[in-house]
Length: 420
Image 1 (spheres, rainbow, N blue to C red):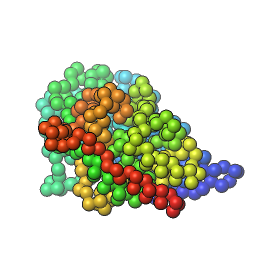
Image 2 (image 1 turned 120 degrees about the vertical axis):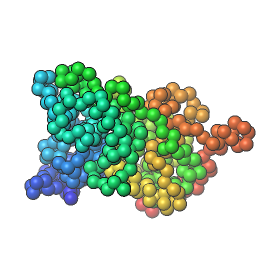
Image 3 (image 1 turned 30 degrees about the vertical axis):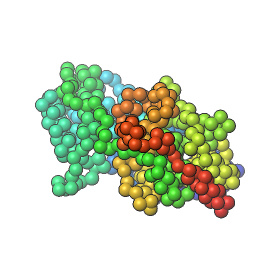
Image 4 (image 1 turned 90 degrees about the horizontal axis):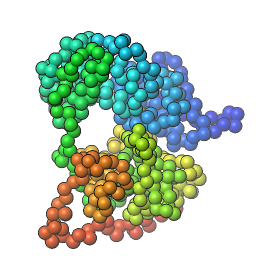
């Protein structure tokens, strides 16, 4: 467990995170931050301590670490919770010949986000579980690669490193198998560059990820209204609205949003995307402040003003940054609303908004607002809708949009602010 202590000495403001690693007390100093941000630190530090030396960080923690400044990342490195983000490359001739050592060597030479490293580690673990840590890279044939892929689809579902009995084991999804096959191909392409092998045994195996319509689910505005009515706080209402109406990625983009990014005067929101910050635009995009979204942000801004928030403070200030925590809490909200959880609960909120926007705006504009390419939008976001079919044959009014619940909803939010 990690604990928080307020910094009070020498006129400094901020917090320290205290925890124990290898029976030694460690401290991370976090000057000039508020308690809500310190709480996020504590949550992720607890996770890093718990999994240290056992498994890779969760996706949420990997995304959080990747979004930290270099100085803050060094604080985690200094206390032994993460490896340095980039490692000076070794000499090309030093490539290990055994499978696990080679993949670790390859990963150490790449300057990528921890979320990417986490995915690579999963593929490495799948390969070494099937072939063995000490298998020579040069001994793996095309037939071996095909056998691994078949094994992965049927017996390789061990994402968290947990032992599962055969009767409880579930098959990996086709897209997961394809992703890991593509990563394995990437590893072995580098083995060619390192002159360990002359050809890639994973070439020719299916690795292109397809859209999975069985996992798509369009969340109507009526369902959105039901969810909003069951949210326990203004902040949770804003989280749901930012996903369903704003189209933000949750938790990464939602939790990175600061008040300085919200421009009420010009109806614009600046979004910082960890997922695409390696692109030319550094992952920064502007999205309209949709008229349906504005009331939620205005009410949250009033609450933040009452609390004395600064422009540099996060918009979502009082919730921990753990993806698992947010998902669990959201599932409780759905249960309270009497709604059966849909697949990919946050992604489908965002995908529903993009599908909806494509009805009214050019695809180039919509993709720039949502932050994906047109190809990705068509493959993984845009959905077929029954109401489109009904509009086409004249049995449904095409004006069906968000209901008039915002007025009553805004009044309820005002009462909540008055109570604070």
